[in-house]
Amino acid sequence: MKTKRKIPEGQKEIELKTIGLIGGMSWESTLVYYRLINEGVKTRLGGLHSARCVLYSVDFAEVEMMQTQGQWDQAGQLLGLAAEQVEAGGAEFVILCTNTMHKVADKIEVRLHIPFLHIADATAHEIVKSGIRRVGLVGTRFTMEEDFYRGRLTSKYGLEVLVPSAAEREKVHRVIYEELCVGRVEAHSRQDYRKIMEGLAVRGAEGIILGCTEVGLLIQAKDSSVPLFDTTLIHAQSAVDFALGC
Image (cartoon, one colour):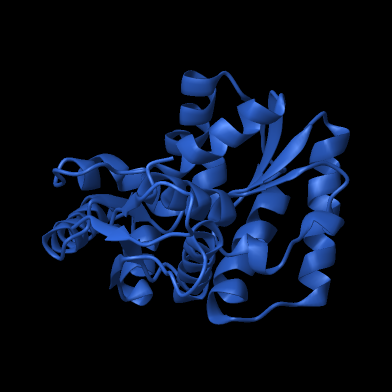
């Protein structure tokens, strides 16, 4: 439901939409989403204001098993049901707090009667706005290697997307699942990511997409010689903008 909030004198009244979040993939990054969204609303509206949210958090072990076994239809059904429940709870639009599971975004959108904000679209808009056309992409193996993400960036926005070598992709993927998703942030893994990202820059990447919502736990701007596009931050900001009608 839309709720009108009081804002500082001299500013117009804003209707704040209720944000639906499908999270838990992993909860480590969903926690960051929740913080960023609430900080964003507070920054815009001031005082004690915070976001109106409906959160459905899945059991990531169940989802990861479906990923590993290639059971994408089942995963789509699971997240589609989550989307329905978030909408029934009063959400006026939905964000999926993960890059990888946008592989089944179509199965989620078809179950909704409210807008779905795609993480790749939000990210691409920021990249295009920056004037960059060639980007590197680090994320899970699924995100780096399959077309559901890279293809969208290329076909809809004309971006050229570079990915690490096969061995590097395996390293990036392993760190995400074995370390970041369980709350481990290791200095040696940060150094590995730095080398991988620098390799992409040497190959011509003008910026790097942190294409997994956990990677921002490990990597910051100082770790790269080219601009970083943190999908968690960008997606959360786009949710705040949409909620405030910006």
